[in-house]
Amino acid sequence: MGHSFEMRDRPTILDVAKHAGVSKSTVSLVLQGNKSVKETTRVSVRKAMADIGYVYNRSAATLRSASSGLIGLVINDLRNPFFTEFAALFQMELARNGFATVLANTDEDPALQTRMISSLVEHGVSGFIISPSYGDEEETISVLESSNTPTLQVFRSLKANDPKFPFVAPDYLHGGRLATEHLLDKGCKRIAFLGGLDGRAVTEERMSGYLSVLAENTMQPVVLTGQATRSFGKEMAAKLKADQPDVDGVLCFNDLVALGVLSACPELGIKAGTDLRVVGFDDIEDCQDSYPPLTSVSCSIPAFATATAAQILAWVKEGKTPDVTARSPVALIKRASSGA
Image 1 (cartoon, rainbow, N blue to C red):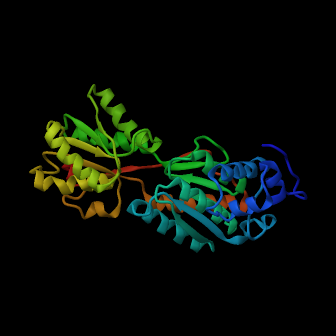
Image 2: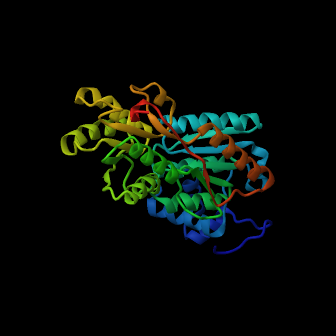
Image 3: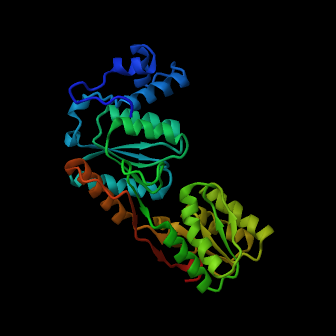
């Protein structure tokens, strides 16, 4: 990456300015996130920082170590109870180990994500856990790279198979298989997959188990991708009834979509659990209280949060890098929505 600097001549703002061909004050404005700087200038300054390995940190980059006791937790959507549960459990696990969590909700906005990460770097976090928002991957990666902070990606990844950014997620593929096999065992003849944004790795993974089981049974898939929300689930229940009334089983991208399907069933005259068997993904707490209770692929969030905390702490405190890619076990929790 560009020039290499020894510790004693660590790159300064002046080096960044020279490398980017701008003034020192422009670099300062970019670092402060000032809105008056043109986007192109901002990108070239960030690129210069990444190229020469410049780290901006209020508590002086040379002091960066586990000493701050802060871990940045950057989450794509805290409105989703799945992520809220993970964040709460992770934070409590870190607290037990004497570390504080600084939480940022990026709300699926990559530009906000980049700003949040830069700001947390400035505040001297010792490590990052990031469940990323998609889009502008290069920009996010460059800020993380120039920060030189241990970063573990969870649930979804911006960059696969990169030892600098290890990735850990539940075994989505196996979860999709378990759910689809269960629907087949229950006698479903036509199974649809609902929700999840098209082309996203996490959607493709959750769908891959479903597709492989159908292929093995020479059945045609019915795939309706879209927002992973309750309202999308509601819409799809009506759409299936109107356009594909032979669909008798659905695997949903997540529990929110599945809960939306269940809530629409009564007014559509569909009996969930018999006419239409419904399976969700994540096993959030709401699954136990829906009507009927929702069958779901459990990602064992408490165990996942504990393991994630242990990994980032071992990395920050002892320099033990996690495996480049790891999968955590999943299990199918059977309830009445699938006729269990």
